Amino acid sequence: MKKIEAASLEAAYALACQELDCSINELRYEIVQYPSKGILGLFAKPAIIVAAVERTIVETHERPGETKPTSEEAEETPEESTRHEVSNETKVLGREPDESNTVPKKQEISGSEPVNDSEAEIIEGFFSDERPESEGENDEALLQEEIEGTLKDLMAKSCFDIDVVEVDVIEDTAYIFIDGEDAALLIGKEGYRYNAISYLLYNWIHTRYRLYTKLEIARFLSSQEEMIRKNLQQVIEHVEREGWGRTRPLDGILVQIALEQLREAFPNKYVAIKRQRDGKRYVLINEFNKKR
Image (cartoon, rainbow, N blue to C red; front, side, top):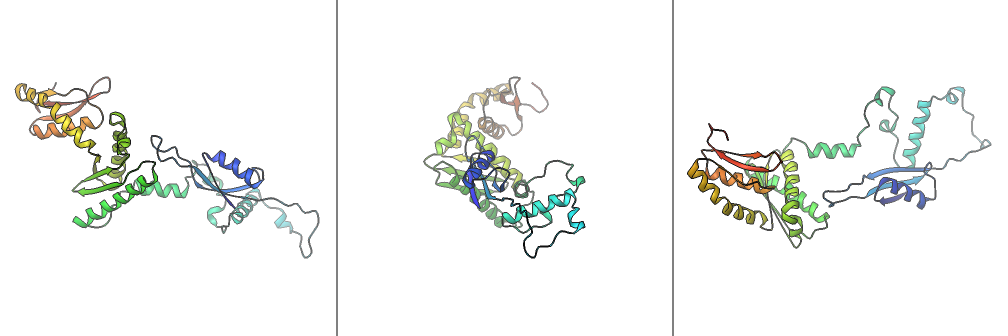
């Protein structure tokens, strides 16, 4: 048996045939890892298979002590024949045949393509609604330890030099701090990569743990908050004078920061994110009983 790694499954099959000196029909394999392109070109995974050769030897004479098959054995149905082939394949890969390796009945194979068991476990675990069974401070400590450990493993497997990953869970929010030599690369030009990472982390953590997220990468969030606070001074003055106002179109995390700061400045007014026809977003401040 050989372990083969390649960029795609097709390339892995071809490489396995080349190294084992066999045809594709003689190749017996098991997929260990499916290939993945990663996220934004990061965290890509190769295809990994374990392969072996199964060659069929045709004998033209009976061996000593070999008995001929009975009429019942000779009249084997196509379904039973296929089941025996599957059983032989499991022996080549070093696994014991069981009911899971047998061919399903016709009514069972008429549906959609089955999902790999390991993939199903990952999907179910990622989107599970269950949270660790603990309360109060112990619950928060357990959550932040689990999230922090997962993020450290993720950064260790990435191509970025990140040496600081800290997570604090306070009430219903996970505060994440990431820093290191390549922290600027995680932010990206104009914060586009930061926005993408923040969006992905929110979808994972909110779905899995029912927590909101606040991501800080090398004081990027703090600098953006300070910049927005200065830019909002004119908007705040206009609202105090006219009773309503709106910000200019904002991108990514900036519109969320502006929303939080304006709601803090005007707790008794209607403050919400609105979308223009071109898709750009801004924050509107108004009275609750008025529309603009």
